[in-house]
Image (cartoon, rainbow, N blue to C red):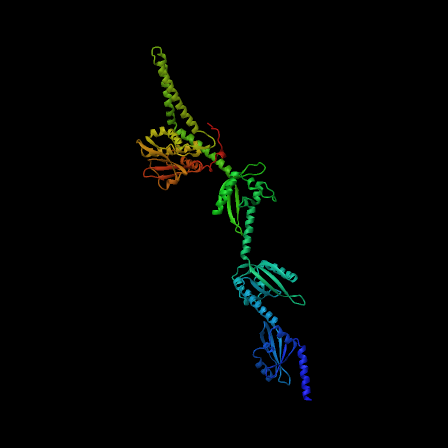
Length: 623
């Protein structure tokens, strides 16, 4: 009867095993397999195993023994079989020595747990190492937690921020923005804003923060706010600088134009549009419409290359204005810039030089008037020498005329009388022409009008200046030694003004010699030579006068500075102004005996830009 009951119970166990979805093995007290259900058979086939016991942990006999002796479930124990992870429990059969080994496939679960653990580690690494501040907040804005970046960004450790309201660090001007952000978060669940937070040291930093609201599942109420904040102080300051620069560019009275490497204009500020007569929304004109071919070629070839090489290029040009208006003289500065993509672009800053051009024209007119006055004064000082130079040929004319009359009266008795009359008339003509040449030179020297720039032979001009002051030098017993080669390169200047400069230098040298060598012979040396690698021509006048002290070398060019009792002190000052107007320089240097004055002028083709013939133009002489 008892055996029948055990058989019935065993059959019930087997029935339960077959309907179980989890793999189950029935083991005897020796650890041998008694039976297995269909789920275990399926698993055995999927794992390609021949023995069912191979599904169990290798120490399953010990686990089974512990289960039977303690009459309790042992496990779970994990084993990897055939690429799967199985979780086994050993369950004692009540009132029996047998044990059920019930397993469960936990491959997906373990994989998910490993992925979660890996994601958790990755999140922790990101949180702990990112330069952005990751923080959690209560709905009212208190810190719940923060990443370690809080120390580098704000000077606070995460534990120091916990429980601290954000508004305690917020800039007072940004409090209203933070209240608005809370309302937007409640409505939309996310928000991005920029604001300032106070560093522990007391200064404020700009942050850009992306916020996300965490809601309660059933009510939808905001229970927490997660934020990612980035320090954008440098960006905000850079944008502010760019904004201010843009305002300056638009407000400046200078013309500002942007162009690319091909010479296409891409931007004009308001001053440029107003000056060039362009509407605010009109397209930028072509560069060819603003510059003539020569200036445009110089800008695109020479200017862009120089700006790319050194960052800046400067020049004076003229901009053409539409509608037939007069061209605009400008002082142009070309700057090279590098964009974010390393591409080059250029800015043109042009300053209207119309007023300067008018002032320079007026200044030149005043200088010409002053120079003319100085020539009149010089003529008065040279009056004795001029009268002597004119009286000599006039006296000769009178003598030859009287002699010719006498020869004519005795022509009947003297066959050679007519020949002598002819010789006399020839000499009268020569002396009359000489007197006329003297007067012509005087009239040219006294010419009044705008300066007339032209190519000049310096040697010939210097010899004319020597002739003008020759009588004065003779009276002072001063010999003028000339070292003037005939093959000197030409200079570009005004003939009368340059002759006035040379005459001033020669007369100053004569006066200096007279001061030291009164009633005794002396000499001055007038020389000219090309120097500075053929870039300029220097005319020097060396005297044997008293010279000047080192401190006086520059003072002698100061207006009204003179050591002469009757002098005005304007000669050297005006001479330097004239020479600098030609693009040259006038300087003084001490010698062992006397003083050397050097007038250096750029050679023709190298100095014309300062004084262009086209600007003033030739004018008729006013006598």
